[in-house]
Length: 89
Image (cartoon, rainbow, N blue to C red; front, side):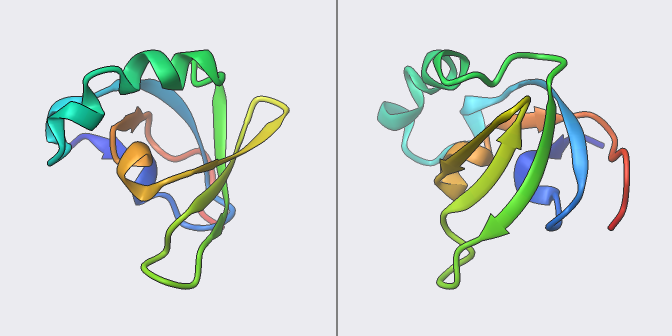
């Protein structure tokens, strides 16, 4: 079963496995999303941790990737495939 960054709970850690922009409803938005995610540091194999979810619709998300903290829209995070969870906090 494929897991996505949006499947993480606060405090859970995983690794970036890849991207799947085909599952996004807005394909115009998805067209260059993988390139944008790579540019801001979402490289395969890096550790990723969910730090915070916004109060309305759990959007945006704050995630730690490597040593950086980045805010993402839920739609962006929904395109990031992760490995099995490393810890279940």
